View 1 (spheres, rainbow, N blue to C red):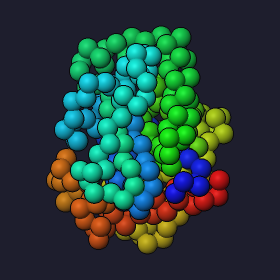
View 2 (view 1 turned 90 degrees about the vertical axis):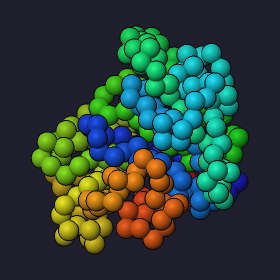
View 3 (view 1 turned 120 degrees about the vertical axis):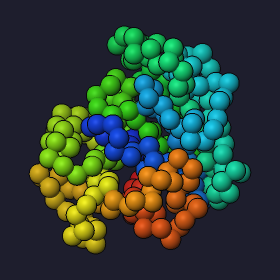
View 4 (view 1 turned 30 degrees about the vertical axis):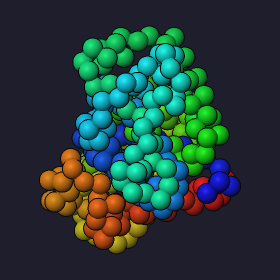
Length: 256
């Protein structure tokens, strides 16, 4: 994979509760399982959850990197030996402590501008170190740190739960953020109840192209705090849809 140019993917949503973090984890794990070197960063600084899922309490958090207190390598934890993936799988965790979250909430634009530069520096450093795919699990909506993540991304996966409110708010993101930043974006329906789109692949809705429409599956919410489906259950229906997302990323990698 050394000859493959790195690519950055921001997984975003207009609202919380869409399942974007679970999709981010499974996508990162599947790409790593396929032999790509992957880095997953928790950019949802105001509601971080990756550290809880992976049961990690690191010495250095992503917050401290964005505050210029350490380099990006101190933040990263390689979990590929634990998961048994063929490629490297490194994760950077954000601090879930309420004090850390309050500090981020009070940061001004000047700090956010410096954080954007640090993100760009991290992206460059990670690709130079051999990372093929950088996945940014962003916070929902238009928080500064989420827009920063989108700004440095090559591709945006915008995750939404079907419904008029979700479609409208996602359309606003598309027109007000993704297109203005000239991003290549794909829409991902999650927990869909419309069986007609399960087999159709891409479809258009409100002028937006939906890459995949993931069906609502009762067993997924029951297990998503304990399992990475794409690794533990490669034959699961949920995994087949994550595979479609990973194939899209792989196509972009090969075309760069």
